[in-house]
Image 1 (cartoon, one colour):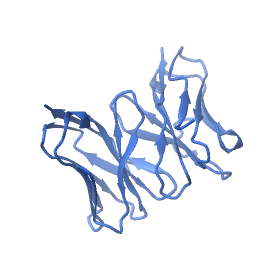
Image 2 (image 1 turned 180 degrees about the vertical axis):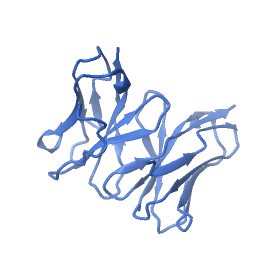
Image 3 (image 1 turned 60 degrees about the vertical axis):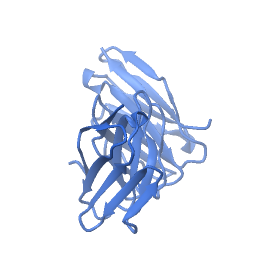
Image 4 (image 1 turned 90 degrees about the vertical axis):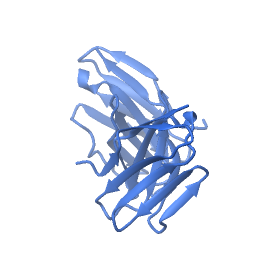
Length: 110
Length: 114
C-alpha cells in the first residue's frame, strides 16, 4: 500500500514557468513532510521540508503548500530553470521512518 | 567523512551468488535506513536502525535479505542467492536521530544480477 501518493509521474515545463508537484497521504500521524531532489547517479538530497503546524514554507524559488484538512501537500518551483531538471520525491514521516512518493521526473525546457 | 558513504558504487554479480553492500553513515547519526530504488521507481523502504533498538525489518522483501549494524555505526546489507529482480540501486541514509530530522543519502550501490 502506497502511504504517500505523488503526481504527476513526469512534468515538462518551459524555462521561467511554474512547476507544481502534488502529494497526498492518509496517515494523520505523519508530522514531517520533506521534499527530496535527485539528479541522475546521485542519492536524493533534501530540498525543503514542512511540519503540519504551518500552511506554507518558502525557500528561494521553492515553496511547499500544506493542506492539513485535505491531507495534501505540494511543491511549487517558481521561475523554473533547466538546472532544476531532476526527479523530485515527496515524503512523510512519523519520526520512525520515511515513506516516499513514487517520484516526479521534471524536465525544464530552455 | 563528510557524508554517507556507500561501497561498492557498482556491483555486478551472477544469479545465485551472495552480495554484501556497505554503508558508512555520518558520524554521530543514530538512525540509519536502507532503501531500494528500481529503474524509474520510487524509494522502497527495506530496513531501519535506531540506536540500540531492535531494527524495523518490515520492508525486507524476502528472507534472502538481511542487514546488520555494528557498533551503532557501519551497516551491511546482505542479499543471499541473488535473483535478477534484485537488480536495483540500494540507497543508505542516516539522520541525527529518529525524530523528524533530515535524512542524508549516500550515492547508492547499483547492483546488477546477470
